[in-house]
Length: 305
Image (cartoon, rainbow, N blue to C red):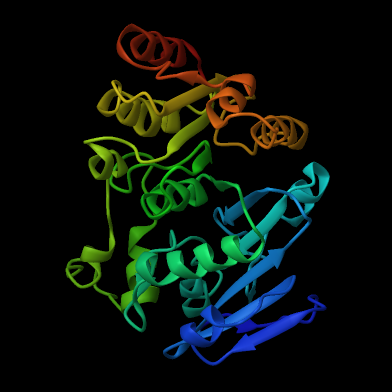
């Protein structure tokens, strides 16, 4: 069973018969639906006349999200006045409510998604005269934002409590992704589709980060702090383009308060050099390397929940 398409809540809609059709069109604000093989890639573009554009990658969808496309980010970008490119993951159309996240990896129908989707996003960025690109995602969407950063050198990638390794705790729903995207139903036979899974993102950027990576982490989220952030911060401890901001929200893998997120976005969108706005937003270069990583790890172990 798969999710049905429903674009009834979107006023401006534009359809394209192919990627080339999209890449040769003059874009307006609205939902752009691009036919790619048997599937459709949906992208919402909102040009607010800002030099800054946020590209939103969705976190896990609630089970109440029974239709596609899922296009998010309009509210908090409106509050901050920046442009928005919200991208829907086409694989979500291949599953039912049990498929909540597929990390923008692609599927057997269209192949690996990053090399297909990245040029479409870049074209949209160019069409609205973007000067600073913020690739944004929380949790599973943060995984996608960091993954896609390789296609957008000199951009700013903002991950909120992001997953950074599909093979580390907490357990990712890889079996659901493989079943929906690659029709792998036997958990003992999951070779098909495995080459779509990058796994540990720090391994992609061992030489150096080609973008500024800003990670905001809730200190009360023990699993993501210890098994996602700290390993990446340790692997990339010497990279000057890694920045972290660790704050206490509350125990567990919880959503960042809206006011706090808008505060961060407002700083990152300011008219100043990119490194300056990152520091002004409260991010610190490689704050979790060496003894700081151990201190954060020890602190999280003292908490009981």
